Length: 512
Image (cartoon, rainbow, N blue to C red; front, side, top):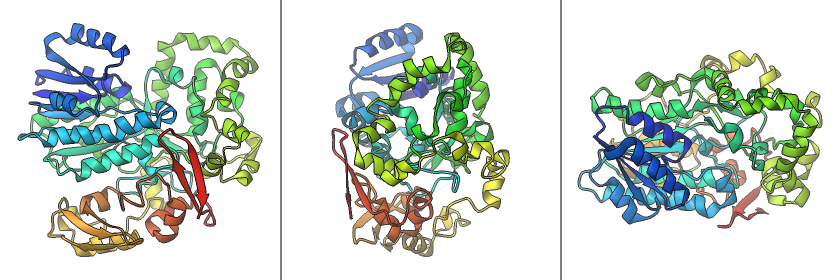
């Protein structure tokens, strides 16, 4: 078996590469490394470690010739390459090149082959957009409401849609959740990104180790013919109940390494209350049932990080005021920090992340002024994090059609119902195959083609209206019940802004 991989310099990619090489069925892995100087050392290390079992292609994932060389003659393509925040915030161009055009190019290279390899595409939870205590649970098929100015999610949305509509012979999309990895602390103390995290954002953490193990298990079980009905579907990668937290207790876990807590180091008005992303997955058990990959719990993993980086324990002897002076004050003043946006009068981001100046004024000033899921202010926190609680309390979003019907039994009624719930129409083309291209019309009159699977199970809709930028969800939610059921959890109905971002990442807005 031959495997091609992108993204092996990333946290998930490193683990996937290491664990895939443990499979005796794998003869060779071909990896794509960009031409950055830092990858020269990585290339040497990989060759030294894996010798004739590894082959390295140098080039960009957006380079068609490099992609052709990567995928020729392989049995599987595992596409993990991504420019993630904060790098995607700093360079929307890099994000577009890798997350959008890189996927388009790689798919094109695969489609050129007479014998196509099986294509594993790593997407992201960020497609679902902002969630809070009102609807902390989500699943495949939920609306994709990418948060304004999130270049990473915007471009990953484009890339995922490309995979779904490319008519590849065999593919799967895996939406990755928040990922724990050994360098968590180091990677989050150089940028204001941490203050984007809404304190009540539901986060289902999975370790990079388990994510890599999942890739190994997919290849292992598939090559042995043990997986039935897995391919040509979308799944959420999660960790189950042991991985479910919120932004607030995630910071508590991290700061425990340096003898602190969220409340010891932070104030609640340092954080944006919305425009983030995260979910607890009601369908996260689907991959677990197939591949039994969920081994790491979030609390245990943080303790493991602390053991690996004992230097952080020295922080226990440092007064909180000094840590704030030399670390967090710098991060609050970083150009990517919400406090900096407020100081600079960045009206577009202030509106998107806070709901405008009034939202800024309403921010809680002390920890007594804020209600937190993690403290039980919205009910029993342990119960809230179970799937049974979500179902019993009606916390799952509606998709607009009879979901009890398997896709093999879909009829035009399911398509008509789903389209109407999205404010549009199914037009024609359905013969019973969920993967054939159909004609649709959105409520604004745009006609487009998409498979029934892309719309009903993928959560995608009109590629003109719903592929930002601009972000039009304020106005679209007024027209689309599918969007309204969750958009108004964190936005008022009198908001009516279009948010725009240029290729350099500059944000703007206009009222419609």
